[in-house]
Image (cartoon, rainbow, N blue to C red; front, side, top):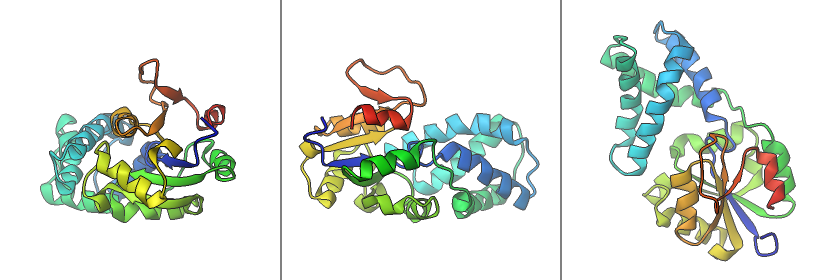
Length: 228
């Protein structure tokens, strides 16, 4: 693998940028700001799977960005039987995006593995995240300088696993699929999306999902050294 790979494409959220941790810290801020009295741990436990459900709907073009932002909050409050007025939910959805990059924790091993890989390969980002915040995340977490290109699904007009996203990223990087590899946490969006166009892939499987035997996987980012 090492001999033919020249470029590595990373997902950002849940792969390098610790989305769940940063998100929880953001909710702590905006709940206080909007006088929403709720147990954060209880909220987060319910919110996380609902958020993942909405992101799948978003990837499948079944909900808009606005519906995702509102719906994931509304559904969580409904499950928790907590009455929050619509105007407050809308304000929370706005504040969430505004404050999300207040905290920018990255996963353990992120800086070390990027230092290691940067000396050997060109690095890139392919993200389904909202374009207006993804570059800020890269800048504020001090990892932007590692990456030659950033491909946002919003800029392409479709989302991973759509082949157009990966082909756009390959074109930006000015390489063929044979010389690249995708690393991400989401089996459907990152791994199958890449493999379906013939781009090799490694799953950062910190979710501990059972994968097919032929799928390359690591449980810690530093384990990428075994492949690259």
